[in-house]
Length: 597
Image 1 (cartoon, helix red, strand yellow):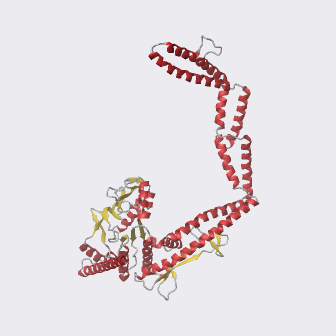
Image 2 (spheres, rainbow, N blue to C red; image 1 turned 45 degrees about the horizontal axis):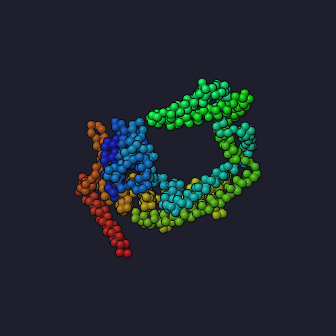
Image 3 (cartoon, rainbow, N blue to C red; image 1 turned 90 degrees about the vertical axis):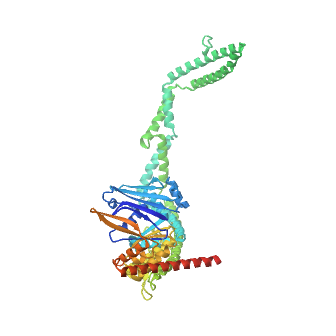
């Protein structure tokens, strides 16, 4: 859960500390006080877009810090470890995001600087922010399909993954076949050029690293006389003169004489030196032999030098045309062979590609059909779950239908696919179009949600969907930003009751203007705006019970100064507390029955 959040220099908030309840926390305040900055701070902690315009004037930068407790499960711990961060001493996890006045943004996780994307990955597993923009987005067909897929979980995710894998290969083959057919003349010309280059390289037959080896040979052949003189002198110095002149015994002869003289003495110190001279003699003998071998192999033939120079010239012709060195020429040839394999426009090659396309299309159709069926099953369950939630939000006669229909392929559709005898469009997320329909009452026809619902009803429908998705989500912290807009009266009480029940399994943070919703909170935070010396500042305060009564009375049309307003606020709190107590008793009773079973 998110235990604390500190906001500094963000919008009208100069410095505020939010201590959040593990259950239901509500944030209220007058219009313009800065409630939205709380949600903006959460968006920043979630890796959202940073805007310099949100930085408070004169602050230089905005900073948002969050402290999470009890979140170091395996999948979260891996993110922290990979980023080089560490949990705090008490096991909590600290995150931080700063935005400077010039728009530059920095992120920190567990005391280490990290890319902003790391915070985004972390937030995907820890919290979900739902706002009015999310409601509007849910009205789009593509988003409604995503809602269904999120609700379905693995039952849709697995066939969707298989579908996408095969579709990617199928599209690649379809594209390649179309390209070969439409560009056959151009591809044939390119293939001729590649074949010419491959033939030219094959005629020379270069070997890896050959150009470097030839350069060394040329150096040696060009300096053969100097090399021979140096090696001969060194061999004479080591092994002695070639004619056996005793006046030039060489190092080996001198070492041998030294060994004999030392071995003939009676002094043990000198005799102990003889084995070391023997080792030196072995080493000198090896060097003399290698020098002799070098002299025997040293080629001073002018014809050999010409041959090597000619070979080098042949290689240079290739390196001038295809790459900087012989290894690059060989790499070019390998790439050319690969490209050539994809340029075959013969009837046999095209027929082979067409057969591969048809095979993949058949497999793709099977996966698409399985995906559609999984979505149809999930659609029935989602519709029932949302309808049940609506009954608890004072829309007892309303009913949600979730339709799953296949999108027909249009003429000339490059992604057309035959599935179960239908020609459909195989998109990136399947062949289905998903739509949420609302029946306002039993006699009403099903209509798209945005056409069938009033403003307040639309908010309740969207909230019901969010609550259902929240049960399907794995994240623990849920944030709702004024999702109760356009709602009042009894429906507002039901929304508060619903959010309180949701808070028994999740941490819930709600920004609201409705006192009926705020009354159900476990902790009430108020954003309070004040002006001093011409400067407007906002802070966040945790309300005590008596202060909650005044805040709720204020929210009840500004009635905090009247007995009637306070009485109404106290009544709201009493109703909320009684409802939560009854819900807790029901939960304990249910757990007791489970234990007995």
